[in-house]
Length: 282
Ligand code: PAF
Image (cartoon, rainbow, N blue to C red; front, side, top):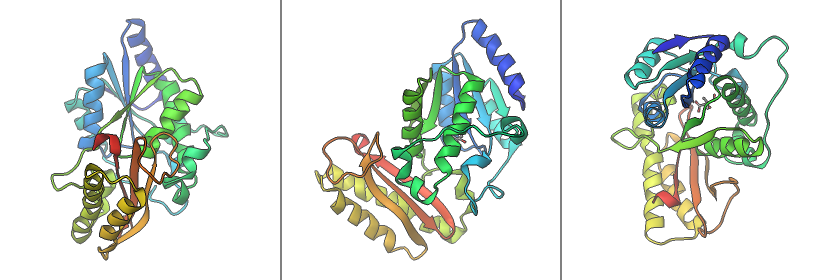
């Protein structure tokens, strides 16, 4: 496995692979890798000849007052995890290489980004779309892998690829959870012991929602009310949103007629966590 930190090196190495007819799988990350990321690398490893992982805490997708400076970083651990899961190349992208002096080109999206996380993080998806577009241009992957935990991000990237005719297959991979149910996230490190316990209300509410769907309930409000009630019983939890939306458009739906995404963002203390389920996975 090679590690590089310039766009130039990534291009040279990937070009060599492509000239030999190899397919390229790509896992873009912000580092501080955990088993969720490992599952994406594993999937990329199964489906491609050459696997690239990028590690870049992208300043553009953090709003004012968000956790850009405190976002956890651990290059040594990330390198080791990538090695253990069979990545071929790890790209530790640098801010001044990614955003050259005078940078002023952006990829923006309407509709899908105006709901859910987009409401409380208004600049977030512009930053995500711009950096993912840039990374796709640098790595030129055949396939790119994203976790379903960030369900809105996955929908946004699929839409961007479709709208802008990008030549890459976007693969969504299942949420990976701790043994007690908490969805794996680099931000779980922020939780105190007490908050870590309280954070279980998210996955418990997901379970409650799934049971309702399994039991045949189709009224989204009834399901959402039960999920919210459970979260509201936890004093350390503050709901940002708990919503039912169309899986592709991210627009709210009242009834389960076609596949629906139940998604939530909840503050546990000052840490904002997300979780979700798709009715089609129930
Ligand atoms: O999901 C993430 O870690 C980031 O949003 C991504 C896709 C790597 C873009 O910075």
